[in-house]
Length: 377
Image 1 (cartoon, one colour):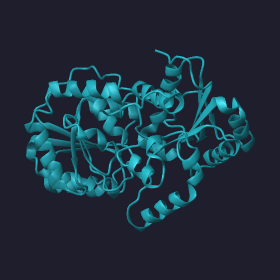
Image 2 (spheres, one colour):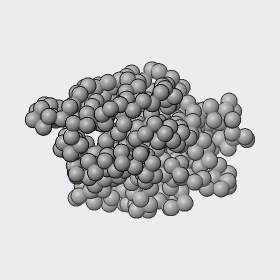
Image 3 (tube, helix red, strand yellow):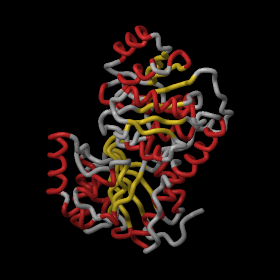
Image 4 (tube, one colour):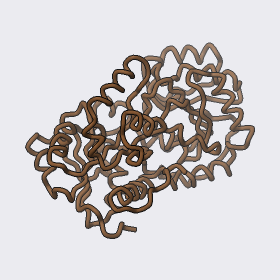
């Protein structure tokens, strides 16, 4: 259903790059608000080669109306168009010239804007420096921003800690299209099917996964989808420990979504807050798989509902083993439990669900509607 009486005639999403994790959501926002609202995207660049190497593709599929790598003159014209009847949504406020240039003009002209962003990593000395930088340089943003879409478990606490007003900060996510085969039969195999999807690097915590698998014994097999510096070390580790392990390398996003239907549990054992969200968690839940993730991962907020999975300490192989055993013991890997997760995830994590939540936030902040409940509740 289209939104009645739109508050804006135009919504522009300013993005660092073309992203399959955003395109479906932006298209869903356009569908939600209907033909009276022009919804578009401006990207600093297309899909970066590094992201294409991770399976993102070229971004051409289902791309919303998008301007890529605009000149300064084009940026100024885009900001001026429709004046105060246009809402500008910035996915970040630093590092990308397209976004920083547009944001400076938006602030100077007093145009309405919002921020959609993951938190900054506040760990260690570098994190303290980031905190001070945000606190000291974002005063004007804090005063003028209409609302902040703070991504992941750590998003809202970060923005509140650096001075953004609580009533303007809303938990948010990367909202994705459901996998095409989401309603396919969900058969249970004889073995526990455990998966990891992501870069094979230390800060992702994948080095703690094979020791966890040893604790499960031969009744479990591990699939690793992705590549990185730790690959050879992990191959040797799997051979030495006799853990049945499949190394798939990098797969296109569409294949990853299809493979999720084959898994009982996805594990995301990050040891840093680099995973501001972790789209694979959403993909796993929409396919019915349970998830075990460290609390570093932003999407671990979804696992506070025990039907979806478990949150573990980062760097703790024994905790991963215990979490998987607990999920199996409590029936969370049964076909019925999978169907419940699919229904839960489709109602909360799809692009359409995100667009509905976005509309509720806009109408609350600008139109005086009630504050929406958090999307994951």
